Image (cartoon, rainbow, N blue to C red):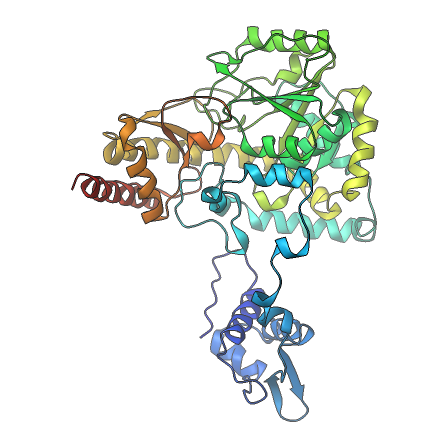
Length: 493
């Protein structure tokens, strides 16, 4: 039975195509015998247009699932695509090729228990997971975005269908530069901006342009796990640095041991939520100047500060041209847009652009042009202001419900910014019971140890709150609390 959902972003024709294809996989249709309803009949039954049905049928025809018989209608193909139905018969990866040394290092860092946090597949994240880093995609103004996209295509359609600049769309780079100067306290112009495909791509491009294999990169510990993966994959020597209440601690260094790159989240450290002090920021820039290092500033969740306006960025303090500022639209808008940017010191712009050109030429031109209009016409700032209010409400409600259901188990650390909380276990012996609770409920806040390399910290879990409504938050926390009680009772028998 086909069930179409008009409330989700996936187009109706794609839903219809996918569901028919899945029924074929399960053997719901008998090949060469099963005749599908006519497009007119199916459209009437489902309450959709014939065009929608025809689009789905056309895709199934193209992929070999359906065949037409003149005068008889549409039937299931006599031989369904082997690559689809026999996917389990393919050799496993280890039988195809051995991983390279770099790939092995990345695989060694992979924690299979965290795979659901890192790869949501085509179905999207679970209804309630409390995994950190997920934004409220349901609040994205799709109608405005699609209207701007149509206007952009109407005015610049032919131009946008060609290859584009590896630096990024000029109108978007101008819009980003203006936004960063006005809202983040940056000092820049459009020629310093390079458009990339999100934060990980920004880190990868910058690292390949600046860091030779084996050279040191300092990262925060605990810190953003994907940053560590990118730097290892790039061939850098990852050096974890501890944190104090002012941010990353600057370690001793010589010309030989100094890092080539220092990765920081100064406005809102991930995951501990520390805001780097002004004194430490200035000291970091002085250190980078002295040792010819670069600082990669990941301005993580800077727009989402709930006790006042966003703090100025580190780049705005930089008189030594040592700070690379990286930003992404994944948390502000939606992750699937895959657009981010690098604000670069002038002396390294050309090197970064050349690396970016080799990797994938450029980001999608239509999306870049649409985002430029979204920013310049004021929709971006309006969205940020609106979503900040939504997150503030969800944040306050999460704190209230967390204290109600889990307050006796955890001490919730409330930082002034960001879309997650660190919850410290009151009793370290409860760690295993709560880990089992995660498995039983499939609600998966991340263990703090997942983000640590050498850091030895009390047991804690990191909870995201932004992606879920009040009802989902209340039900999810109540489910965790009930499961934890069961797990504790089992362990005491």
